[in-house]
Length: 117
Image (cartoon, rainbow, N blue to C red; front, side, top):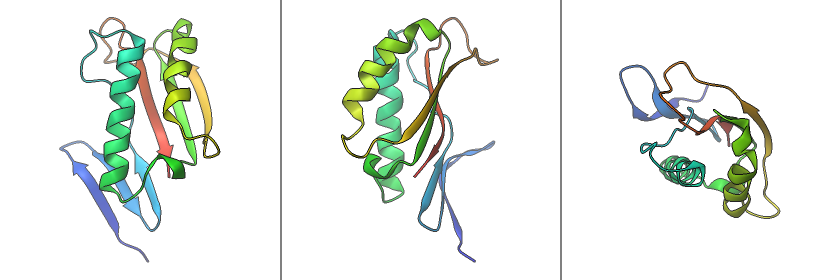
């Protein structure tokens, strides 16, 4: 059985876990929610890039992504950032959805969760 390596473990959860050749990332949210959806999604994607690098991978190996938005009206703006970030020919399967997280205050837009590489 392969060991599990934790990336940036915290008191409640790790930012990511590596098992075998897979990296499982927790939901990524922007640190600064004063930005519009474009800025918030960019922040979350930079964090994903960082976690993938710490796990020895990159975005060309993403298998699936679940994208949650507090306001589904931000879908087009989120997609514009997402489309500029993903690598042509290596686009993961993704599922967008809209939901307000319980801990969100105001409009905390971009959230990515359930990312598997």
